[in-house]
Length: 317
Length: 278
Image (cartoon, rainbow over all chains, first blue to last red; front, side, top):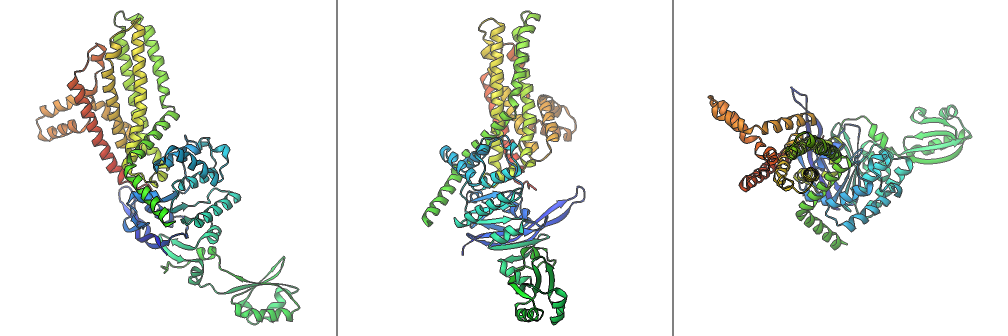
């Protein structure tokens, strides 16, 4: 696998205060790599350092320490920007331009000719599902969701190899989110690498091959979701749903009943078994109480649980 | 597929090396379009009204002096309107981009900070050029109207108009420099001070030579060379009297302005190139 993004000990300090300046560390010694054609999810609470990382990679701010290389070139090398695309968080564009004009302007910055510019702009506006009636209307009249779509289109104007997306689902309705999710998945199919920050964990969970979690500017976890679950001590939890029995009766027949989590729901009794080796014990107890088994399924620790778990930062592999 | 990708990459990098001019033109065109759509050129309407009023009324009030007054009023208004655009649009050129974060999408593209500054500068200079050309034509037409026919002043004012334009170009550079590190209000104020002091350059030099203290001599001498000498670019009164600047004066003024602009844009790029966009 080819590494396309390589971040080594990247650190960013900001000076705060007017008279007595002191340093606040926004990003602390971040090191990670991203491979070609994978979707890399970058997670963290507000102020964790996600946007700072993206701004450093885009050279909008300069690192206090550390280096980063994209496609084998140092981030200070502007020519590398020919091969990447970037969607900033809450994008705002020249509001006196129409969507088509804005994309043509972006295309011009890559040295594309007038015919190519016009064709590329129309293709991308269709691809991000922006209604054609809005193509020639000034951006100042756009809703947040429409701006987000235009932002995605401009990030793809140069057919980049790597696309950096900062909160790509922000401001989109459920249909829009689904469309953008499909678009991102489609980009991976084309062999592009996606580096995306998002607060919407379900999207990260569905889309991403690799995930990194930042906490207070430090890398807390990195790896694929299975590795992360292992790091977080996820066991093979199983959920059993049964009818014809109740929680109190079943608890009486189960050894160490506090070990199991029993919840009465509309669809029946839900029993969470911490380890799959204990399934037989539960089923035997159910039979003894006259209950009927409805379903048995594994429970995976969600990314949200991992994201919220309060633990000291640990540097991943 | 690998070959296609390699060709694409080679093409994109070649585009970067020769693309500096394209990118500057693209940014300049966009800055010009912004000025047009933000109705900056609406000031022309006011100018035309002012000039029409002057042509109709002042000529009747000042026997024999009407052409001089038209030139005086027209060129002074041209300078004043231009200074307002150079200062107020100039200080917002960069600040607005940072404030609205439009700069994020621009610098994610293969655009250097220097290209951005030069492009923005050229865009505003283009706007000022259109402004000055239309106003200059207006003054020439007003002269022809007042004279009830052709008059040599309609042509002889154009070297003075060129000098006004050079002055506006220098001021735009100064406004851009200040806006690369300070707020728009402070930038506008500082640029306005430079505009005023720049017209008294000769006095600064006089002060530098007449001061007894070496420190004061050094200070005023330094200011004389540091601040733009706008007095050299002011030729409105002689133009109103039908005088033409001599060629060496004109050539020196053009050369001085271009060098000053080059230096000021380099310093702006240097400062802007180190800025963090938080």
